[in-house]
Length: 360
Image (cartoon, rainbow, N blue to C red; front, top):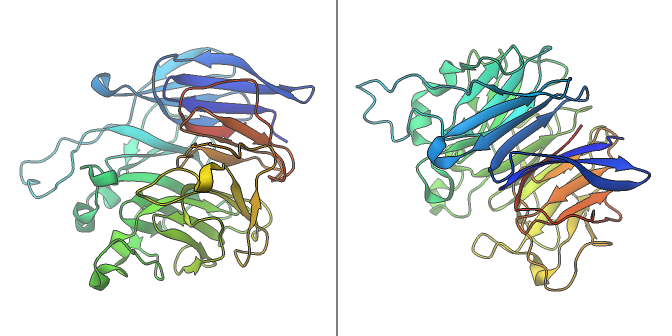
């Protein structure tokens, strides 16, 4: 099991370590700065993206020797004069997700606006996937929460074939490439968008994908926490079926997939879009162990009285064992499970609002 946990918050990055069964903070970095994405490697390397608003996005890396150094951030090309019909900016808003995959030293960054960048040198330099960026359909991507900027929130690299890539976009559905990003197509047949007029609900480009997660041992199995429910795909996102058995509600942002058992996944429900708090003021985790046909509502160790924690897209993680999980909330709560979610403990910490958790 992983014994290190990195927590990116609105006011800094916190590293926790497990010692004699107790999780404690062992390092803090960037105190006061919003952390938008984190990636941790087992060798001790960490990448942290900061969202500094007025001062822009920043990217830092901690090397194996423990020293932090600032890296170049991904850069969009200048917006051409004839791109006046493009409603989205051509400048980096923030790095929303960082993922490894495909080769040693290779990283992927999903950004706002919705750009996909690749680094082959550990984040020292980045290149925009221009094929995706220049697709005419990108101009139809909708912004998150009514804003101007859509964002890539999920990047899935098939561990068996690194040329096979899936990305989840808020708000523009699931996109696939089978040639390492040389070409792209919009997939996700079977999703529906309840928030759209009836004639547009099945349109794949209006699907608001909150987060994708896939089973590493069976990459064709992909889970999606969608804006209006949960979906499961058994063909790497080409087609989806809605999972209706989830309790206590179908709304949420985060999802984690078991690394080896394709039938197991975890979600953290909230009431609905207009009321983003836990049902009945009880923080719970919904777990399926039969591919979504049924769900258990896990609550042992979680607050069950007047608790109003919300968990964002990247606020839930599972380690490679499938037994150790962690999630952090917008209220600064942090919970860890050592038994696949059956029970949870809260480290003796009180954190700023949590954006992302990652094991290493």
